[in-house]
Length: 387
Ligand code: GLY
Image 1 (cartoon, rainbow, N blue to C red):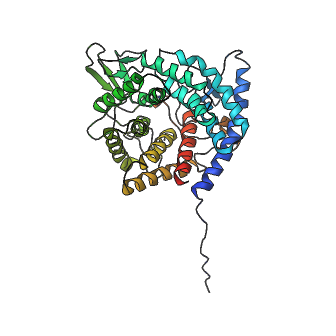
Image 2 (image 1 turned 90 degrees about the horizontal axis):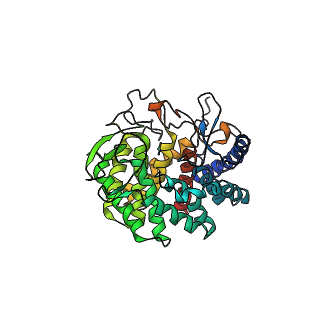
Image 3 (image 1 turned 45 degrees about the horizontal axis):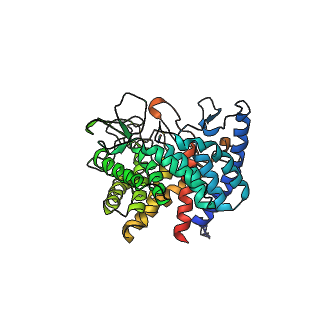
């Protein structure tokens, strides 16, 4: 006689998964602090921030100017938000304080990432009004990079371009929108809106994928070139670029309620969804010729999940279900052993398998501090949605 035993392993709920991931994140982020302390010993007076793991397997730190410096304090803020454990608030403040000089930085566009992840989350969670002038100053500094002819803020101040604007820069617009909301000048919001419109017009292709970089003539505003820097090819769909786009347009809609921004976000989502691999984790470029034998970019999955979760709240039930299903798929894979670091490993980074700049053979298949940040942000967004 054959006895059939039905397998009754119940799938972990998203609440259970979130609990498990934040427990791991708490351990990892405390460990990461000790790693940073040990690096800081050899750099007296300089705050150090996590970046990644070097090809030789050693820990890779950055200084406060590196575009990613806000993500570790931001990750600590999310761990504090979820756990309520004051240790993480103290750690967040410890790393945030080193970023304060960025409020006056005018030679780079990434003050938006840096200040919103740190001071922005601090204000949101603690109500500390001292964050407000830091955010408004940062937005005013960023606004100096706006060119009326072009209709965009300039991204990089280096390189061979005349006025380069990268899709990533859409993310920095949140600082401008937030600053106006906090009492900053209306012109800050108007710059963000102009930037979003110009980017929508010039960065996106007919299929709603986007170029990485558009170069402009700063005198006339004319487009002088469209290309990639970190993607596989000028005409390819670099995964993180697409992820920045699907995060940013719902965010712009949140502030502006401009239907055109929402329609554009939906168009990006409809382009992306059929292209995402079955496990919800994009390869580093959707058009990389070596797929499936190529590296993934976990960061793009985490960023995309954030965007899809927000977008799901603005659309009809059918779209909403599809966007959430994709986000859930990505989050479940990121929370699996394949992507989630074991306790005490990975130098304290939470996730494995992100790709920063494959073209330069830099940060390939490694942890990246922003993958951790957006993974936790996505889980928090999910939690708030179901509550
Ligand atoms: N913002 C730079 C990157 O996404 O790699």
